[in-house]
Image (tube, rainbow, N blue to C red; front, side, top):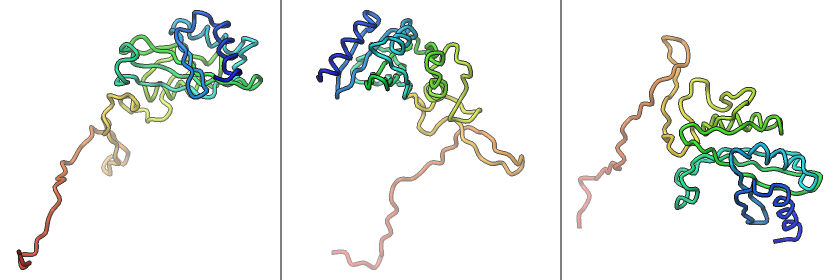
Length: 198
């Protein structure tokens, strides 16, 4: 590990203390984890501490760990991963936090800390179904208003739940349950009856 990375890890541990539940250093990047109840406080410190100064949230994504590895995350399924950048100090960190309830994953919004979190959180809600408490406008971003489910969840069917088509009688697009035509995947072999068999 480089001296700069070692210093950043030291600064993170000094500023966050026991709010960090885990840290991993791999490929010259630091990933830290915190509990959901410390999420806002950790993000506030990451932004405001003079030794850290993570002014920019450059990415936020949901993650579904349903079938990850050998149960490395003790059955906790949904997480949010934030990538942070300090422009003034030229360093980066990744923060991961798990939503504790698999049936209704919820975490606080980061919009008041980094306003750019708005659309990132809407995408995580749309694709993974992760709720963000106190978000100013939490609604779907990439799927249509009538879409059923969250397509990046690992248990979401590959063919989806509904399909849309244009109905000429109603003169509009309608939604209907997915229809699947059975396919015969056995190749059709055409034989020339007059061919010599040897």
